[in-house]
Length: 116
Length: 113
Image 1 (cartoon, rainbow over the protein chains, first blue to last red):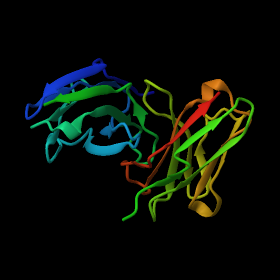
Image 2 (spheres, one colour):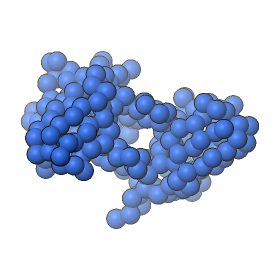
Image 3 (cartoon, one colour):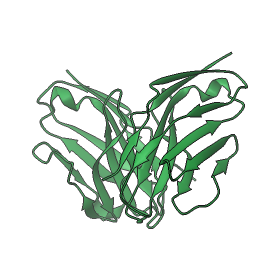
Image 4 (cartoon, rainbow over the protein chains, first blue to last red):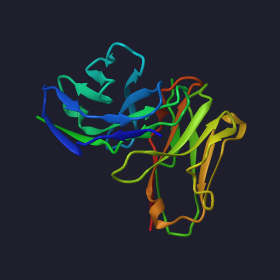
């Protein structure tokens, strides 16, 4: 079974600053995938970034990067140059089993507030 | 490309009533998921379809919840009778076969009074 832990219920960051959202995971699978989603107050889950367990380089997507430390079982999300529109809930999730279509297991989320 | 569509966006019912939610996945996505997200928690899987077959419904409360995906496209999730603890956001997601990235719809917010 997979487990995701997000220990930061809430975070504040100044506009234009960088912020790191923590995520640790637990799995016995050798092959797995890690995801980050953003959930604004409207409710939709927006896919941000993906990291495969065998990917040697950290994933990057625009202002988002994933700091993947396999030995520590951590997959932290780094948002650079924060914008007011980044204020939302952020969820770390994983799928295991090496299959592309296993369901995602989510953490409890971190609420990010960007301050002008 | 159109995203995942869900309706209704909001629903308020009294306990013991029934309710149904509809989902239309991204065109070409054979795999469809229904998740339940209770306030303050991350989404949890209720049921997964691949085409019109059920892949995983181990966490679906089958005494009150049912779901179908006729013709392998649209899906309907039903609750009958609803309980107070069913108040949550119901999220539908879809993905291509063999692709891990799931794309979510806007969700349906259900309040059971």
